Length: 470
Ligand SMILES: Cc1ncc(COP(=O)(O)O)c(C=O)c1O
Image (cartoon, rainbow, N blue to C red):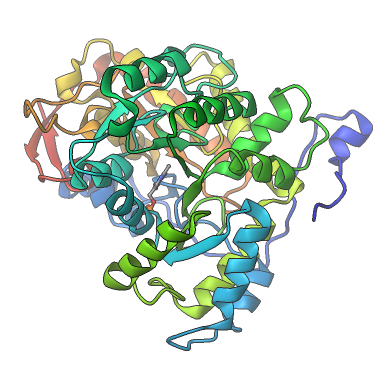
């Protein structure tokens, strides 16, 4: 399945230089704006980067989700769409790709990740059960709560400290998990919700040793493990680079071994898989698969398209294979690290070690004078946009939402602004522009003031909330 390892020219000759492993065949012009235009745009958007028009953005690092550049092969695949309502040949290509690279037996396609989260939560959580996981993700936890579950964070403590250098900050704290199982009883644990990498912790990886040990613990108690495989190829790169025994193993082999410790996975294909839309859920258990197939036709579409067009499934099947290419994944993760290194050289506070898909700026360290209920990370996101039209996203108290029991803000330890790098879209020159903008905003930090929330939606408030300066 896997290709031989190719070294970059820099690695072959001991040079510093490195370049993207692709050349550009089509371009999309982007626009610069004036400071006055950006001031108007951010006020119109209620200081929320989700409410900006993309036309008003210069370098868009809002997300790496669905913003990737497809390859010429994927675009060719788009032309091969079989738009039959049932049994499209593209579905079978997709099923083959998931079986080959992830190893699960049964595939349920969905329109994107949260469609799959909805199905697995409805199928596998009973009212009142607990769902332990290695840090929450916004949509994942919401679907678990809507199904009657309570999410319990069992990630290692190091993950909550932005400066801690632990190489696998996504690891599950197995003692914490075991205590929870003893306290609540194994029958009250719906399943373990494992994510690799962990988005909210800064794109931090889970080690293979941890996945293996988690499997043993769960076997002891008869508990299933479902994996959020959204960025598992990136997770595999960190295992290859950092974990003993994996340096010579291709990404594809590492992904397959990791999945082997789990009972199934859901996927937002808009990330690792290099497409603009798509998702899936895959499991080994035939009885569960039957229940999921019954649900998918209610919420997503027939079980051979699940909300995707045939052409999208074809691009996705091709994207899966491309996402496992060692050269691709190295370039992808190392581009993020390049930006991180520039910032660290200037002593700008970011989450360390640098994760797989994004740079996370530590807003608490930028603005120690702004209390958390004045939304430091929301402020920092707005300031970066005002400086040079760069769009990031708040990942702090706004994203954490309110506690459903008390109604109070949840105050996460991490108060971060995320700059997610789309795959194969921006060059190293764009990264230089971003780094200089961050430096400028950091230098002006003492003059910066907080925000107040003036509109708050009931669910996933970070998407549509509006703010004004205090
Ligand atoms: C880790 C993780 N899980 C799940 C999702 C949800 O996927 P989607 O946006 O495709 O619904 C995302 C999206 O950002 C994610 O980052």
